[in-house]
Length: 197
Image 1 (cartoon, rainbow, N blue to C red):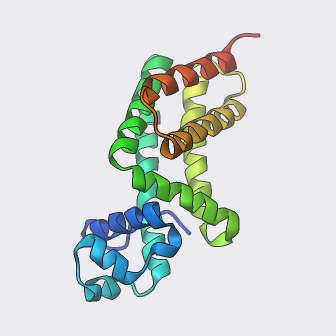
Image 2: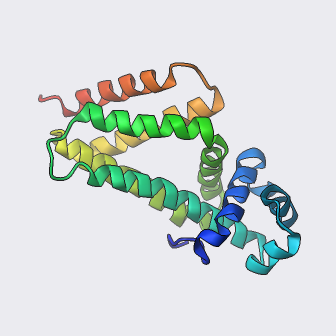
């Protein structure tokens, strides 16, 4: 699956977001044309006209989720260029965005984890999930290199693993103080990774 925006752009965005909410609540198997039509408040005919198959709905929704998240990560990484790198400011921006996302769009992020599990079971979803991980890694690698890491690629992989685990844990068992705890934990990790030996 190549990363592209949904075929007709913003016009189909509400359909894709409705599909993501269904995936977040019921998993990939919960996606049907009828369920998406009801969730989006549209007619069944409108959905089937633009998306002939269930796979087209799922693929479009996952591409939208990928575009949203990778766009944010890439913008954050680009903001590091041309100025002195501030680890704490970068983390605050990253963690703040995810904290708000989990509070307001939790189902979309659950849908992302559903896609990860689907990729473990089927090659069909591996390309889009691989692109997610690669964008996470590149963003973290740029930040860690700017922060002084001697092994930015390897350290980025460790950082991304910790980040993904913390996000999944918060989705599964939400707790207060998540933003503060996540920022503190990730800062401790980064400082240990970039510490001079």
